[in-house]
Length: 54
Image 1 (cartoon, rainbow, N blue to C red):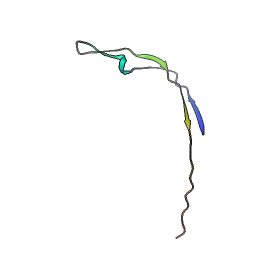
Image 2 (cartoon, rainbow, N blue to C red):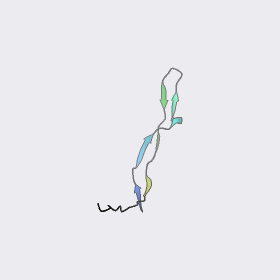
Image 3 (tube, one colour):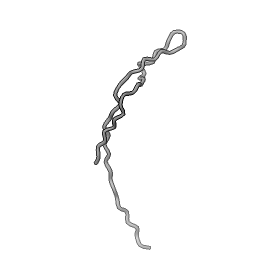
Image 4 (cartoon, helix red, strand yellow):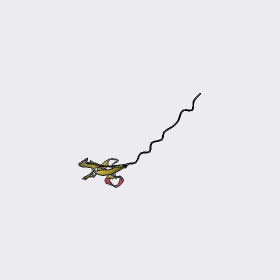
């Protein structure tokens, strides 16, 4: 098992509520700014398969 911390820094992003439809048919966007760092885990399994003799 292994754990990895990914340091991605700061990013701008949009969620569904950050996009607003305007009456004239256009859109208005309100981007958010936030940290994009995250922690991931990896778990592995190894299997040995035998090859039967002919």
